[in-house]
Image (cartoon, rainbow, N blue to C red; front, side, top):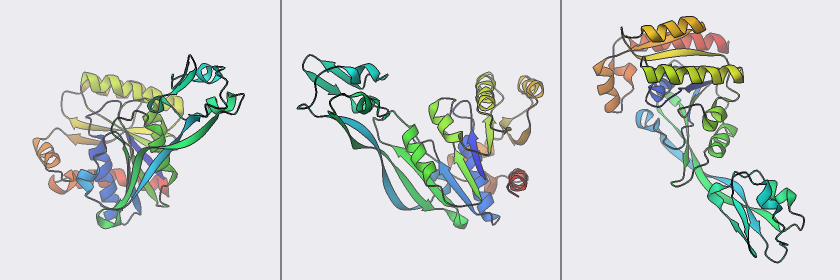
Length: 282
């Protein structure tokens, strides 16, 4: 069972939900893996404190032009939608940081002047946290901008655990789509603010287009959530968990702790959510 924890915007508590749920599942004897797919800024390790045992490079193919074979026809430039390869006067310029590794330039080159060479984009790390929780995270190298290949490589090496929890990047763009693709269920984490509601509506539309089942987790839940609840009722959404607006939670989070260990009652709430997910597994 693959569960993605996502959100329409950053700062909703997505990683809080993902890490606490993964830790509780592992302590409840469910064979679980936490996978941090927020590769631009992975921070699940701050809370799970894993021991990293393996670091492997993530590489993508980029074009290399043989000047002796190149006839300067410009077909490679025409097919590239990202301006990663340009023909200027009597030379061909390649911009690796813009390349999306589609291989189109290689296919259209009439003289066979373009081949592909590997370029390191980031890395994936593998380890273990407490209670035997498998831990994986991706890291995009500083200065890089194309995240989906790192996420795809992470997901290609998922362990054969009963429960896989994918901690998604925020938003609704390509990195999020790559993360939630293939998930059995998505937990959308939101907060009862105008921005939270706006971006939640975008995430709901995205998942409905992708036809992936989902439910909600409301973080910082308080009495000022009428607008959010009106939207939930209108869209007939299911709420699986509400995390209260409580200063103690912020203090626990700021110390890098798992909040279910510090706040009475939260463990039972997460166990109830885990029970729903376990019923799906079975």
